Length: 368
Image 1 (cartoon, rainbow, N blue to C red):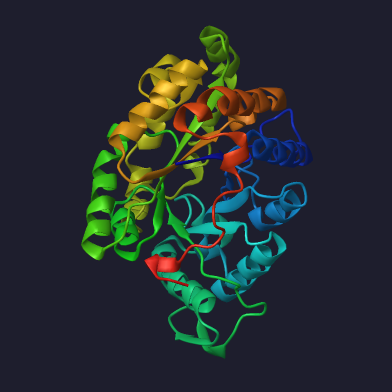
Image 2: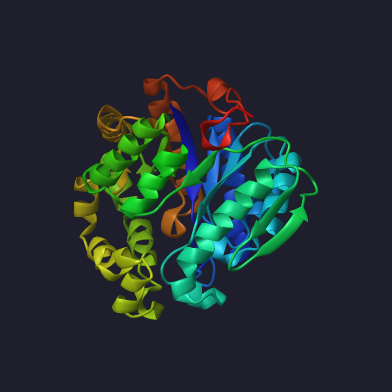
């Protein structure tokens, strides 16, 4: 099992975007020294408290100049926002620039985003479906053609050509996403903030679909995390950042489409009040109900072990240490304590974590 870092690059008042980027770049380099195997970023637009990660490819190009082994991952590329052939070309270029350290996920973005980026809400699903097939066709073939509702491509090819096939990630909340991922052999990155019990049913669907199609489950577990040797001090120091992290999940909801439009477009999760309900929970309940990990290394190691025990197919646990505008020093402290006090309990050391994993992995479980 790997350990990774995940960030939404939230930009709360008190920090400039330049400061957010600069601190995150330092956290990547520090994370590699600590032994984290991966650093993942969301791709998101228009709402700074939620994220200023509008160009993860540029961020990873910069981060690659400060690191040697840690792998970079976008969770997820918002496909309706992209020309899939152009995105495939950019993915191939970044993989070359990072020395084969890039991998990515694909999705259609949060329910509030399509109208903000000029995509009709009702088009987001068909655009995503078509973009997925065109993106993979471009990455997997020397030459490719495509005739669809949104893109028509005749006998095209990428430059540069992808040097390898890629491990594909998806994520989200709909059952269809989990079933499709299992059928195609894709990895699942679960949303932050949700406990295992809240995800048990869709993860079971994923594992069943994997088994039926002959694939191995590949699950990445993501949780916000703050550590201190003193558990009470950890809870005190993380209170504001966790509160902001929760509010970020609903900051865009007032600008989302009406509930009936969200449901019709397949975004029923955003119309169901789940995010609002979670965001309204008292801080201690979030900790007690395993939606965030805040406490001592011993406490959090127990929480991780509990997930390992029940989550068949778990391949990575990724923590968010800079949630909600957390102070830079606090994020670094969490990374350091996690490395020193938690990773060894799961057989991972700084010398073994970041550099011992093959850069390439096949699409849909096939051999490159």
